[in-house]
Image (cartoon, rainbow, N blue to C red; front, side, top):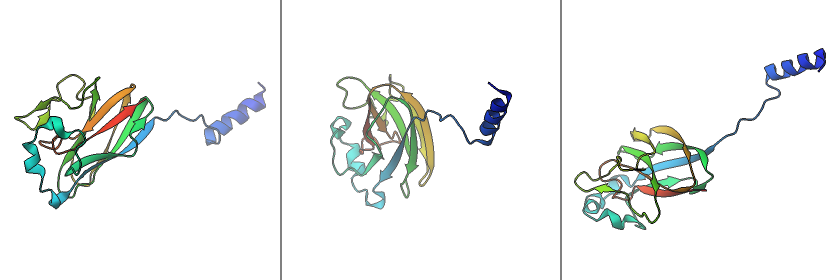
Length: 164
């Protein structure tokens, strides 16, 4: 390379006119929501068998994703607690073949986060209106995102994510 080319190339790189794009992972918007003061079913739902929550309609709380299927790799979960008065969190769990519900501690009203694959990462408790992000590397598979605040999982606060 000529000296002039080297100087010109260096000047372009320093000014930012030429840059190498970084490989970006996938970003998913996550909305942690609840029905607020209209939540008349929550206490009754705690008594229900959490195994029957799959396919539950009209749940008093939930998790909404901007995408339900994403490519494998680095995934960022940009999480918002859109509740007006309840604290929520988001935990990522890997579902193994045939699994339709997570291991549940009835006496605590919570998922057993210490069981294998039940906590691959989390956005810890968010106050109403708070935001936070979690970036993790996920392999192909089925995942469940859930809130593990007492009683929230059994009240419908979970969703499925497919990673291809």
